[in-house]
Amino acid sequence: MYNQQIAVEPHMRLQQPRITNRILVVRPEVEILSAFKHVFAAEGMILDTYNTCEQALEMLKTNSYAVLIAEVDGIKNHGNTDFAFLSDVRKKHPTVKIIILTSNGNATVKKRVLEIGASYYFEKPVFVVTIFAALRELRIMN
Image (cartoon, rainbow, N blue to C red; front, side):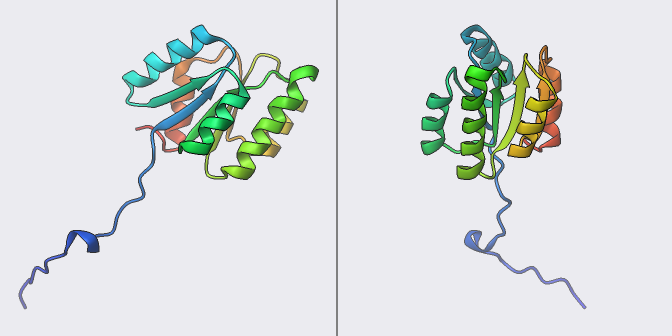
């Protein structure tokens, strides 16, 4: 027996699914968004940052994201908007992983976001290394 090499044309090769490193971040604090962009860029991540749910929904119409990192306040006046936003993202973009950050966390907020389909729920303060660890577990980051 001998080894025979078979030429494989480029279009015949199996392609590995490409995992995007693009992340959508929704937080009300503009200063934090700017800091996030710099820290994540240093790790090779592309961040699109917005401070409203409406802006984020518009971006989801035209861009593909691996992850949505969103701040949920859980406060009565804004909480329903947050939950509606997350539900909308989950329905229209089922493959997008969701990471929640909150400063007003409680058992009810946690239960709702996990029911909606969040992969992670963190109460602030949250260190960037914690978010990076979550991204590694989601296989978004090496």
